[in-house]
Image (cartoon, rainbow, N blue to C red):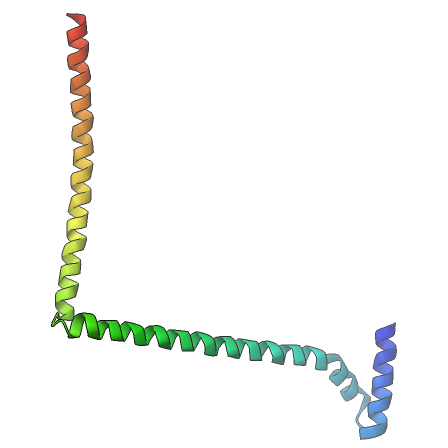
Length: 123
């Protein structure tokens, strides 16, 4: 009820000053708060994007400077780094496989030790 009286008073005030159509005034009154809120949200979003872009630019610059220092000045080629990285990945896979085989061998040794103990106990 209070909203309706506020709306009526706003419309009567605006009608007397600008000679606008009542439907236009009603739409403006109803939507102005939402539009202001939406505008504020877009401004906040824009500011957040600017902050993120600034941070990304800073990270990119640091990575490029690291690349220049670590790779370019040391004379190491990018292809060589990738090649060595692939070798490391392959060795890691092999090591994982060897670890699994070692677990199986340990289980078998434990079974054999248990069988030997049981045989010694029975004799």
